[in-house]
Picture 1 (tube, rainbow, N blue to C red):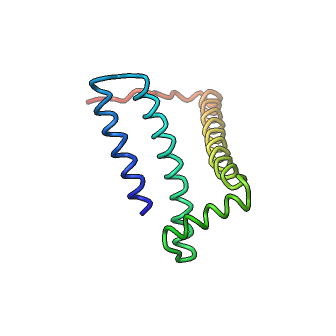
Picture 2: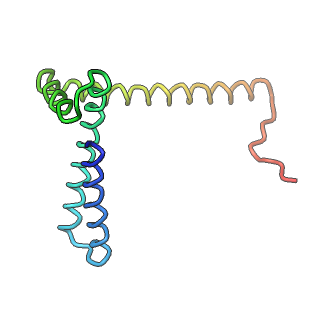
Length: 122
């Protein structure tokens, strides 16, 4: 059911993109932006509904209702924390990569290693 809703929204967006090829008006652009926002919201709620289906065995529509109840009972802290956790993990990954790269360059410079960034083609 959730995938069907997303597929319908995506089909409408594709039809809109086909229309936009011939006439690139401001109204079509705004409708496309609104549909994009609706699509991302539906996909986000689908993820939570699928979790409820998997954990508790609810039918999809009932799981969607449970998700809405969860969000209203807990406020929007669930959504905010979900986005914050993802961003924190990205920042930690970037920091680890930056520190590792810096230490590698310093070690290579300190040990006077010649590092060739090019590849030998034969």
